[in-house]
Image 1 (cartoon, rainbow over the protein chains, first blue to last red):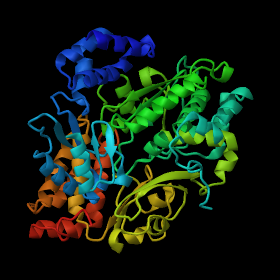
Image 2 (tube, rainbow over the protein chains, first blue to last red; image 1 turned 180 degrees about the vertical axis):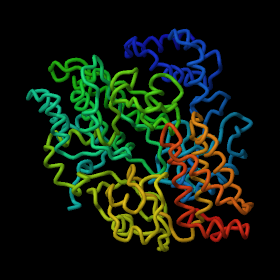
Image 3 (spheres, chains in turn orange, purple; image 1 turned 90 degrees about the vertical axis):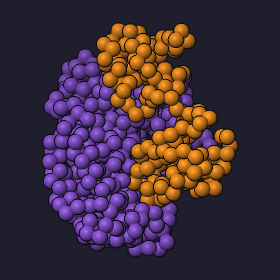
Image 4 (spheres, each protein chain N blue to C red; image 1 turned 30 degrees about the horizontal axis):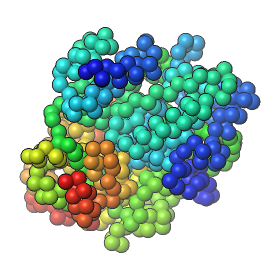
Length: 154
Length: 428
């Protein structure tokens, strides 16, 4: 936590004290980045650091879908399942990745390398179908392109 | 008409997002003109009013009028840029972040000056990666060059821009929900009134503008509001970024003057329908806008009033094209699943209604529909409409109502025969 606290202190310089509540989400995101997923004690630590009610931070931590509260694999594969991607073959793409990794959406491979998720719109509709692996967008997907991307990560 | 561009004025190169490249195409000239020529905030507001600019986030409210609603004589004002682009079909803000982020930063500083905001926020979608990186790099460049921060360009005006990343919630694109999120809470929408212009972020008067809206401001201040008002239609000025997706040969981002014909966009610019199939339907302005049939877009132009006259909305300008052979009940299942997933849970009609609608539509799409399902869907949608704190409820109800109205026979067939008229196809 001590190295996280340094990062927290660094960020705190940007925020005037009267709007310190605005740091809740950034601090949760920083913690997530450092630890992979969040647990209740993370929320309590942040609440303590910002001198805010614990429930405020716990509510935020449990409400946002990107704040994972269970362990995920090294590579989180998120396939967009909203309208434009659906029209361009999202189901075909998910089936292909599922087969390739041997897991269903929502699952993590036994070696903890990949987690497969179906997510809502990632604002890449003009280049559908698409997926995001960790932070990187992969657009205009084909089966061959997926094979290439996944093999490079193996 | 139709040749004018505000954004698509430069080649997309590896470095077109940098400060150098932006300055070479006239970047920050507008800011210099405002701050060095001693233009007052009221002058900036007047120029924007003259341009006739209407917000590009979806509602289409006149920008200068929105600014004028801010409560007077407050010690603190906030400007917030809504960059939580999450409406399926919409991807225009990303284009700005990735190719010309300084456009937004200059626009932010201009708007902050106009409304006297000392700390301004950009609330950007948490999933955006390249957009976020380019924005942060650009912001760093702008700070180093004295274009943001203390005494901008040597003037008396100071403004910091704070970037907040979202947590993956669609509802945070709704302005009051976005403010809740910045305030470190779950992104629950707030009751209005009071409107953000009176009591917004941290209880101070706040103006929330879209990325595209703010990014147009440098052009308007540099070339004059009157020049901008020459483009577009009588009530809808300027150009807009239109994102076209779905079953077209060349989907993507297009900038056109407001009032451009849908058919021309679909058949000429986007190369027509995949596989040269017939057109089945068009969603004219993002996921939630009521679906239109081909005959309704025959002479339809892309402007707010024209689309409204057909019973739909231009919204965020995200056009989704659907080819003949697509199964509409299955497509509605994708839609209802989205809203059931994204409802924030605060209002009972929306929380329960979106889930219930999704359960019924999913059952129909599995071939297990029952007599009375259609009527139940209509009843639930009606029960949600107008009975929620924010517009997500209406956004969920509108597709259900319009799909049932426009393609009722497909739902009836699915329920009666236990199978789709189009084999449940979404991909063509």
